[in-house]
Length: 228
Ligand SMILES: Cc1cc2nc3c(=O)[nH]c(=O)nc-3n(C[C@H](O)[C@H](O)[C@H](O)COP(=O)(O)O)c2cc1C
Image (cartoon, rainbow, N blue to C red; front, top):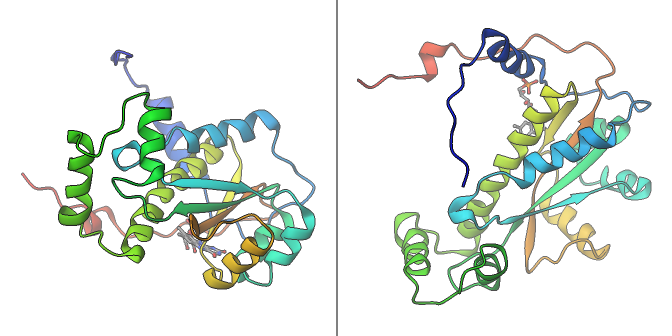
């Protein structure tokens, strides 16, 4: 366990963070000549790996697509990814795990092999998780379970994009694809077991090739309501 040692934050540190958020844009044009250095790439992946998830069950996996032929073929199913596939240094397909329920093999694996605890169907943690899913969050269909897992995969997405931005690396999150066709393609290639996973999103990472438009956002007063 690590203690949280209070440090004084500096204006420079705050500005560095906000500059990274200003700098981050859904990049439409990537410079194909520029490659992300290995150390930066590993840092981005570590930000994904260290991301939090509901109950800590990490219902995700990531395909790191380096194969040029696959990148070319993906364009057929992923209209929103064409810019990234044409020039991004790195390309990720994020998968969300299906049927992560209290007694699933995945939860048992997480509890036993990752947390190092004994797994039991009657353990308080298992019962609590079951109640959370079936009652509190009404996760009682395959679709709602998939969507719940998929929601969580967006936490590593945000962390990867922010980490990249802090390292001056551009990115583009992508939902512009036909999920059924894409999953059939990945399954045919032996990259996806559709009984275990579905595609959540894609992410291109690299370096912008041109100027980026001005960032437009709603006003603070519109989105934040302080309740005193
Ligand atoms: C979940 C998600 C899916 C997106 N899908 C695509 C996409 O398929 N293709 C694309 O070019 N941009 C995509 N975008 C980029 C958004 O259009 C962009 O983030 C938004 O317009 C705000 O602009 P900014 O990110 O440059 O600040 C997506 C963004 C998010 C968060």
